[in-house]
Image 1 (cartoon, rainbow, N blue to C red):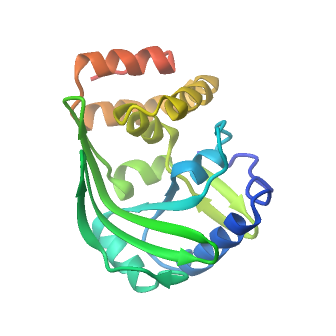
Image 2 (image 1 turned 90 degrees about the vertical axis):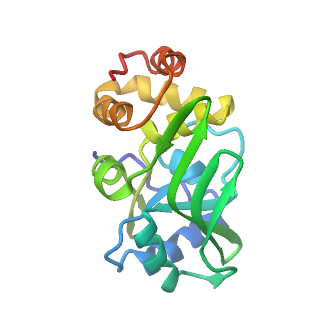
Length: 205
């Protein structure tokens, strides 16, 4: 996917911008694939947010997350541990980068609403990752298809509605990945119907 007009998007938030620069400087030299998600990723994809991003969420596969931890930016707050909180499971570790908190999420999966969704960064999400420019660095972002499904599963209407509006502007970009995520995970028919109503195109099984 092509890059968005992201130049200057994060400069409105100097502390966040500085932390993203430090993160990119540290990890862009590593061979391991990681994607910027959460509110920062949404900001850089032009999704309307109700409040400014406060922290940095980085997603990677489990093996990559273990390696990234060894060279993490900023101050390491803990070691990676398997975290099972509510419907979520992942390998989780935390860092303080300048004034911002950074969370590294490895191998994330969620079981909610009788559906099961597991992320695959390297083979599924990264090939569809949009690119953003932050300072002199290029960052790969979690695709909106993931952000829509994740936020719908956790009932975050303040997130999934603006994400869906953004996706409707360029459905041809998002549909191929949506189709793959439809096929590789477990969804109820009711959930599928909700997704189709949000994005405005058929979500095939």
